Amino acid sequence: MGLQSTSSANWFDYASRYWSAGPTVQWNLFQAGRIRANIRVQNARQEQALDAYQKAVLVALEDTENALVAYAKEQVRRQSLLRSVEANRQALDLANQLYRSGLADFLRVLDSERSLYAAEDALVLSDRTVSANLIALYKALGGGWEPAKPTKKSISGNQELSLSQR
Image (cartoon, rainbow, N blue to C red; front, side):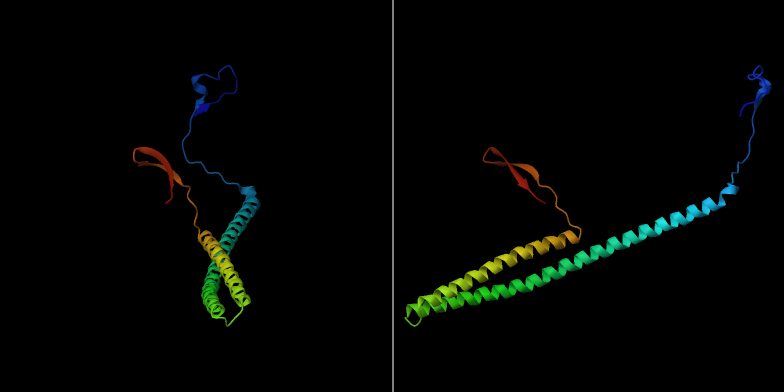
């Protein structure tokens, strides 16, 4: 629908009105090369996005595998250190018994204590590493931390704020 006139004097006359009905077809006949090039560009972008996705998945799997291996190896090391601490405790007990009975000097007791403390220090470091590896594994598997939400607890009539975690 619209208005059409050859002069401005009869622009708004009834005879200058027109209308038409029917389907409209548009075809960009002279842009075929540009359309084909745009299709190739979009296909290349799609392949690039797929490659980026596959890379992200492979990196995530690698991180998870590395975290699992590190956690398992440190667990084995921790068990070995635990046995070492127990053996050093027994050695210290034996050195103390030998010293009390006069069969060994005090230097042997001090040496046993030093070995026990070194083994205990290594065990503590291993515990820290196990915790760090567990956190890395949790992170690699997509875990996250939720912030603590304060809740009110009533203890004998007093209001007290405490933090609760899920």
